[in-house]
Length: 88
Image (cartoon, rainbow, N blue to C red; front, side, top):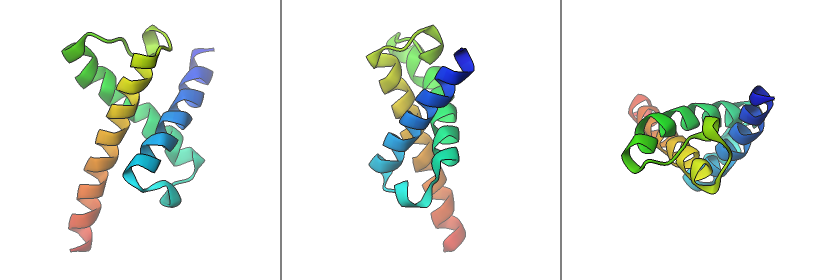
């Protein structure tokens, strides 16, 4: 059941993060899921210890969703930096 929750939450978080960062038209559902899952890992690793909020693994709450979303936005921002450098 945990993997299904990761896929669903990853897709939702990745989709919202891509809309925030303006990359929604460039990504499909699979990339949204990957961005959401990796973003949740980044958020759980960076943001959870700083503020004491749990990650998706500890239960689905509003704060765990926000932590995952912030991690996904950070991931997309880093990817955008690398894409801009390779074009220049």
